Length: 218
Image: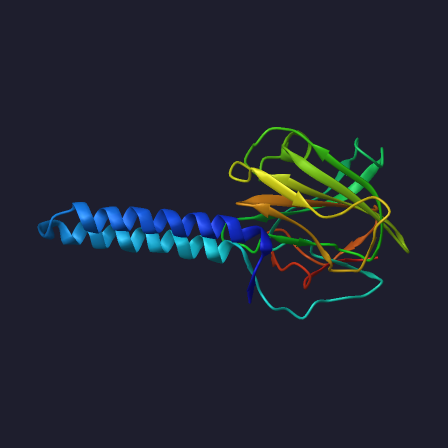
């Protein structure tokens, strides 16, 4: 396991806050309130470990295949339905959505190998990530990858806690399957829009892993 580069600053800040709070606690609370200083120490240490865990990047054997669509995110499948895409395709697509809780790995990966043909950031709201309108009204970053058998649109969507979407893609870029696409900080969601008729290999509420789980076969 490694720590994602996006986490260095957050981990450093949390460590500094941890040190300041506990130095003040041990200095100003009397010996008769030692239990309180230890409680503060345990709670703040737990917070530091949570921040470190949030930015973890586990070592995984990545799944690859030209006929496979791989999970772009860790989390739970919360939507599998036909929708009309107004942003790029202007027609009906099959939407598969993955909800990421704050406990999930938040690195995002490309579901297919191909060329980035569309990359667009959208300002928006911060509805809870499982809200039906979060796909179209929340802050989000959309990327379309053209591959041998068509195109897939991937949306990184901010949630009520996620306030920063990081995307490393650019139009014209050639990407490998399961390559790093970006990172979303603190609880969010990723949508994929696939061609109608795509065979989906997962079910609602199934837990998936980025770069590993086969979402669909094309």
